[in-house]
Image (cartoon, rainbow, N blue to C red):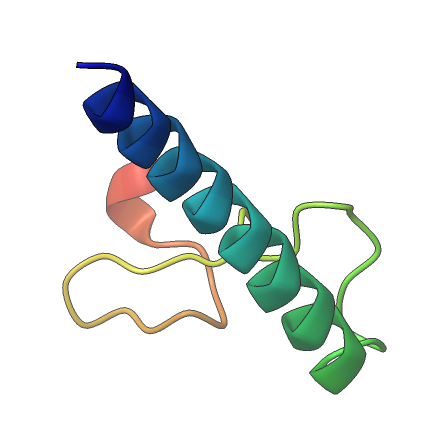
Length: 59
């Protein structure tokens, strides 16, 4: 039982570290476009509007 708990906690920590790494690398690649800490939060995408403009359905 303790082994399962350690595996679960380790998996969650690994996912969190991987997400921080993705955020860091994304911010380095697109540094001139993003000023927020969560660089992936600003991505917009619904249907075929793309991610460069706000969709009319979301306004």
